[in-house]
Length: 135
Picture (tube, rainbow, N blue to C red):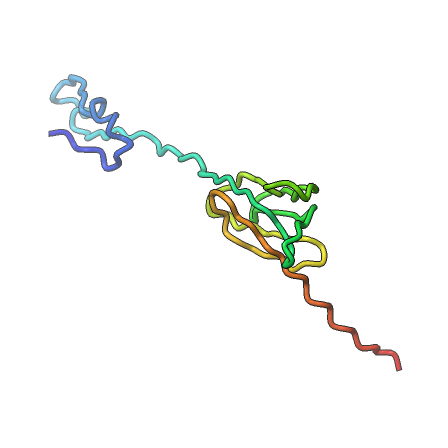
């Protein structure tokens, strides 16, 4: 009985592994067990297509707002058109964290999901005034 492959992706190779070559019984090679195994096949990265609107707390679109997929070099900016139904629409790796930002607004980081992801950015807190150190 031939050994079953430990991994399902190797099932197609089972007939090859069961094939044998006739060797003389006293041959050293006849006494060496051989197991054929194919190299691991890398899976293609899974991506998601995200789209949506980026607006302020009053519902106004923020043209030029940026969307960055953290840990990658993928970035885009929101459409300058206030009438666009989708301000941004990048395709990013599944599970990526998207960082949304716009000057004067606090950044927001959300996980990428397939489909619509509308984002509302709140105004950034005002910077604390510096104390004058001059006497």
